[in-house]
Image 1: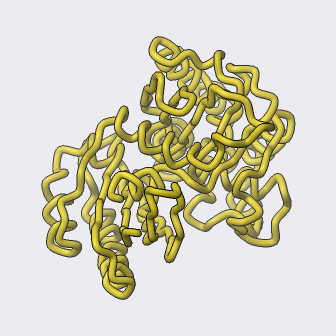
Image 2: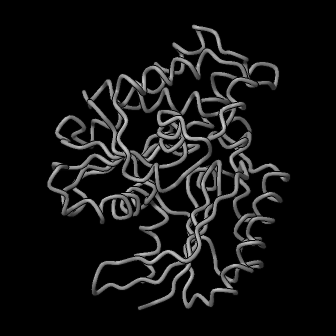
Length: 313
């Protein structure tokens, strides 16, 4: 048994998992899992740089996580950084800050590596399920990018494309520095067209329609599940391995895209940091399901973070 810590720093959020990993049994015993919305990717699509305030929010979360890691006595730590820090001109500032606080250098991984970790984390518990057919298509809808991975026990093909809930919101739904409330039909159509073009790219590498089970990861998907279940708050146990039909996803996406900020903020299971970006995330999910003909999505709370932890162990 090895006590490990994994940090996943994405475009919208930074997350920590501290766990005991037993490679002999394939069990990962969670000790602490937490998430902070830091919006590291704020403005990156437009400026090509990480904003000073976004960096400070991220470093503040790192300082909190350093205390948690120390309290639990984790033997090994791996810090993985994804889309926003891949794209930024000033990513050296980010690397230096993390190194100073946590004592490890963040690994700015490729989209393909990101996909490998996501697949391992999402499917390790599902491979023995008789009611779920392989191959799996794991879709990780992040803030800046979406990863598509097809595989059975191992990855067969993977592709990362630049459509995520933050990137799509900033590219299509922001006017004069504010998120349109609600967006126009023209804005929605332009966003959908972007997602369709990204799916065309993904399909050059990944046989999307060969998948028998769609597994959805990350905050946009888990939040859609929480809304579908009408949960009184975010409940990880209720969300993990829940199933949401395509028709229900369509209803939720339609409502989110035609609601106001206040209406979305009033939904108890929607994290305040996702209020302005969840509509775009739901549309990405719906467009994927329609493209591949998926009748439902199996929602997983275990994702890239769990895959990183296994890679450390």
